[in-house]
Length: 429
Image 1 (cartoon, rainbow, N blue to C red):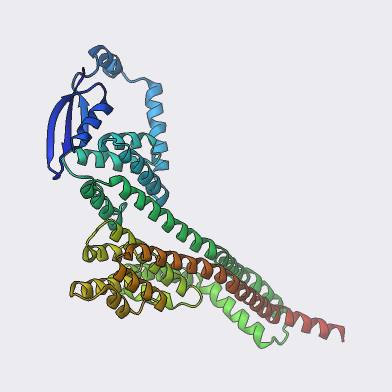
Image 2: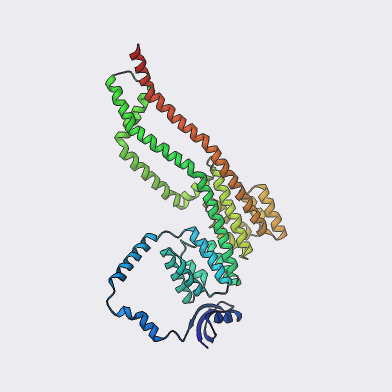
């Protein structure tokens, strides 16, 4: 019977090493799980025959073939082109696959090895290899994933940590996958609702730039040769056009500098706090930002409560997941109030963020001990409100865009075509 050496963690989380006999690798993993030990790495001590190893490495002693070298070059080029940012879809697939593998009792190192073969993004594949090496060095999964904070959020890490400590890692990955998918759908709805207005505004800006830089100067030369008295609207358009033609480099450079300055300010601590507060007061789109953040708060809070995370620690995790620094600051104030002994209802009431209906549901959930279930209903309520607001947003923006286009046509008609009509009238007398 084959012999296997293993690295694993016992019920208290301590790293243990040992050896056992089993018919297969899966049987060895099942035997360890039956003893209450979570496998990290299992290796067969007998290994493969030396002839196989020699055959597999014989090509390394000689000169590399040109075809293999060319193939490696194409592979590196393909990896460089495919080396995109790790997006939400890949994290969702990762969470679903880890849920299935951990539920089946697969050791974590073998699960990560299998996932590396199916990942197409080279950056994500390298990340999984680093996580696997961290596991083999004795770290737990939450710590190994925590070495990549740009990919895995505090909520992701907290749920994995709770899943490891409670022995329900599969349930933790299931909740993570569900949350990531709902969050992705919300972002997709917001982008879909703002795509058409953004496209129209960009088109209008490009059209105004072309008309100001090319069309109006041509009309201005014609009017100058005729020597006719021009109306005020035409003189205003010609003055604006002359200014743009003369200073267009500074206008473009100033706009780019202003954009990057605003981004830098928005990423700063104080600037981000002010901007996240002000954008919730914007007309039409402001309430959508607020409800999206509150839906994330309710759903994330429900997840950490259901997972058994202490409420004070969970509020800190929730604050980092809402995506709005102003609301995150209010949540941290809720945590301070709860740590002083106040109820969740009173802490939520003091923030002035929630509607009376939501506050009532929080109160009932706190009294009945079903706060996680009612918070999920609150999240569903906000998601429905966001969907309704996005539909209403499209209906409200469309007439505004039509008015903008009409105003642009009216200005061009008064400034460009009115002098032509005056000249035609004077010539026909």
